[in-house]
Length: 106
Image 1 (spheres, rainbow, N blue to C red):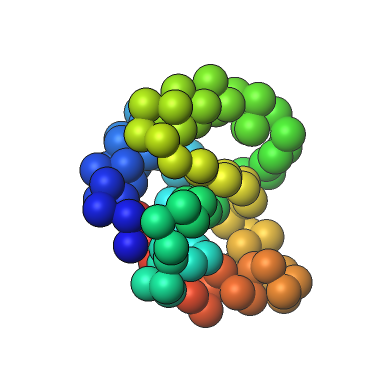
Image 2 (spheres, one colour):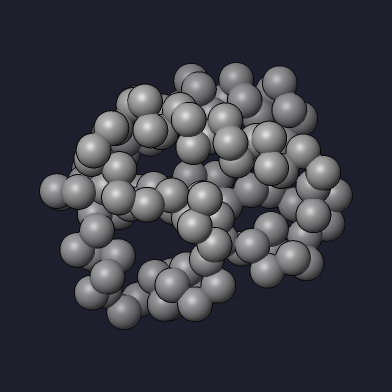
C-alpha cells in the first residue's frame, strides 16, 4: 500500500464532502489499493456515489482540476468514477459487482 494513501484519501474525502455536501452518499476505494496488493506505482481508484441522477462526464469535468493537482502534488495517479446511489445498488455489471465486493468506504 502507498504510505501516503491515508492522507490522500482524507484529502479526497474532505474535497468531495465540501463539493457535494448531502448529495455525497459514499466514497469508495476499490482496486489493488483496496485489496492490499498494490505496487508502489499502482493508481488509486475511487467511486463517488451520489444521490440523484449522475452525468459522469460533467462530474469528471467538475473535479478534474482538483484531482490533477492532487496527483501532481502527491506523485500518484487517481482514477475517479461516478454513479448514482440507485445505479450502484441495483446494476449488476462486472464493474459494480467488483466494487461492491472489494470496495472499502472512505
